[in-house]
Image (tube, rainbow, N blue to C red; front, side, top):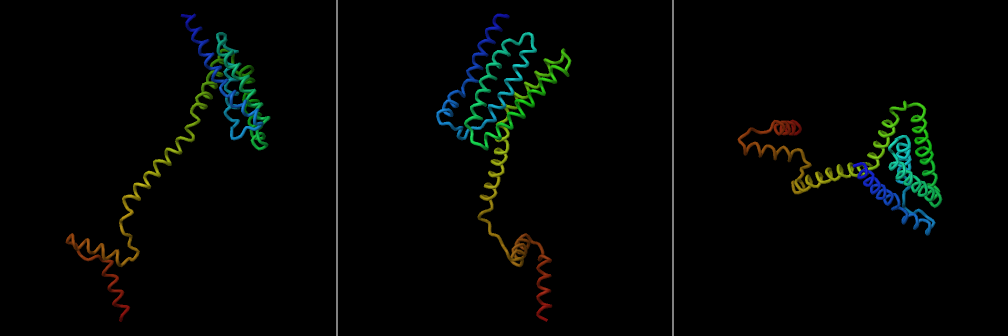
Length: 211
C-alpha cells in the first residue's frame, strides 16, 4: 500500500511539473518578441508564492519529500517566469510587478517563514503552514469567480430590463393629468363606480376661474 501511494505521488508530481512547465511556450514567444504584450504578471507572482509555501510545508514535514520536490521545481520555474516578465514588460507593468513581487514574494513569504520557524510551536508548524497553503490554493482557483459573479448579476438585471421593456413598450403613456383622470373615471364607471373626486375638484376650480 505504501508503494502504491508513492507511485501515485510520483505520477502526480510529473503531471504537476508538466502543468508548471506549460507557460514555457508563452515565455519563449516573449523572448522572441522582446515584449510581454498583453500578458499579466500576477498569475506567475501568485503561483510563485504558492509553490514557495508548499515547498516550506514539504521541508518541515518529515514525509514531505514529494511535496517539496514538485513544488520546489515549480517555484524555480515560476521564478524564471517572473524574472522574464520583469525584463520584457513595459515600464508601467514592470514597476507594478516589481512592487507586487516585493510585497508578496519577499514580504509575505519572509513573514510566514519567520513566524513558522520562530513564533509557532514545533508541534503546530505543519498545521499552520498547511492551512495557509490550502487557503491560498483555494483562493487562486476561486479567483475567476470575482469576474463571473458580477457578470452573472449583470446578466440577470439586464434580462429583467428587457422583459419589462417587452411587456410595457406598447402601452400608451399619458402626460396630461386630466386625461389620466378621465381614463380612471371611465374605468370606474365601467365597473359601476362613482366619479373620481379629483375630477370634481378640477371642474370646481374651472368654474371658479370662469367666475
